[in-house]
Image (cartoon, rainbow, N blue to C red; front, side, top):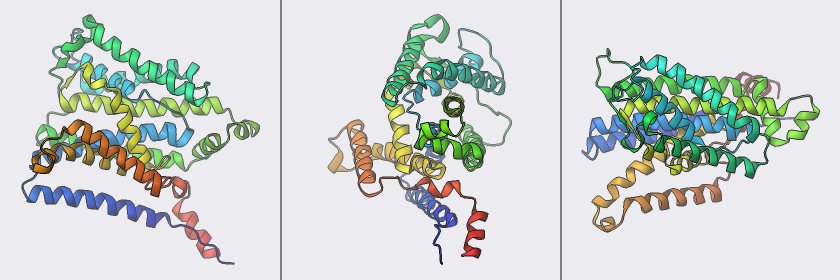
Length: 346
C-alpha cells in the first residue's frame, strides 16, 4: 500500500519563495528609488522585532492554546527595563551595560509571567483573555503615571546601542543583532516543537482532559509555555529600546497586540515558519500603506484607517481561503528523517 505523506521540505521551500518574493519587492523598491537603503534596512530590522513577537505569541497560542492579550505589556516590560537600566536620562541613574540589562529584563519577565499566569492560566479561554488584557492596561497606566520611576509621558531618551564597536551604522548593527536573535529563537522553538514536550502541548491544546488522563500536568505545561512566550516578547522589547533609542507610554498601544495576533493568524497558528512570514507581511502592510497617499487616488485618505482596513481584509481573505493560515503547522511536528524512512517503507 502506498502512503502519501506531505513533504516538509516542500513546505520549507514555499516559505522561502514567499520570503524571497518580499525581499525581491524590497530590492525593486530600492532600485527604483522608492526606498532608500537606510530605510529598507530599518524595515528589515523592524520586521525582526515583529518576528520575535510573533514567535513568542505562537508559543502560547499555537502550542498551548493560551490567549494572551498582554503581548504589548511584556514587550513594554523589556523596553522599559532596558531603558531604565541603561539610559542616561533614566530617573534611576543606573547606566548598566545593555547585556546586563537584558538579563535583568528576562528575570523580571519570568516573575511577571508567573504572577499573571498562576491565577490566569486556570481560567477559561475568554476569562483568560480578559485577565491578560487587564494586566496590559495596568502596566500601561503604571508606566504613564509613576513619573518618579518611569519619567511618565516625557519618555526616556538616550538609550545606548547594544554594540558600539562594530564597523557598521547603528541600523545595520541592530539588523544583525535581531537576525541572530531571531535565528536562535526560531531554531530553539523548532527543536522543542518536535520534542516530547511539544507533542504533549499539542495534546493539551486539543484535549486537556485527555492529557490529564495520561498523567500529564496540563497546568504546569501551560505555565511553562506562557513563561517562555513572555520571555521572547520581553527580548523583543529590549531590542526595540536599543534599536529606537527612545520609549514612552504611547508605545504601549493595545493595537500592537492586535497586530501581533494578525501576524500569527496570517502565518498559521502553531507554525514557526508561519509566524516569521506573517510578521514580514504585517510590516509590509503597515509600512507600505504610508506611501499610498503619494498616489493621487489615495491622497485624500488617512493612512491610519486605511492600514486597519487592509489588515482586516487580509484576515477575511485568509480565513476564507486558508482558514489554517498560510503555513499549517502539521508538518512541523515531523522530523524530515522520519518522512524519508516512511517513504522508503511505503
